[in-house]
Image (cartoon, rainbow, N blue to C red; front, side, top):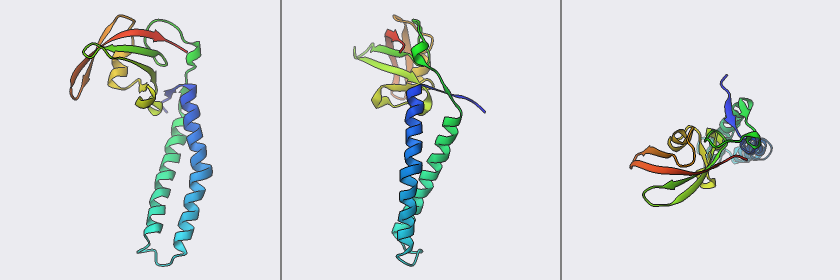
Length: 157
């Protein structure tokens, strides 16, 4: 069973989602299915079919989260240090074309959220950043062509 690298915050977010799915969403969809059944003929009951579809999604997500959290290898980034980019690092990069500065935290795939500034260690930019130091340039191949960035800051914690 392959371990999944994850930050403590990432694991906490997934565990909170799992708890909510089990204690709030699952009971709600069971009630919705029961209520829809009471409306009679199930073959033409859109509410019933929608609730069953929602139940299928919830159960699938619960299984996925149980698997991921059971295989999580929590890496305490507060104990990491250094000047080289690796899992858990917060990295600032300068887009060499637009001169736009962006800061990312390198995290596991299941906790990545670009809007929150968390990118997966397995993403193209995450892969390109691993092992780099301040002043290094990276090339990230993207669908729209290659992008070039300069690492301007690396910190942990």
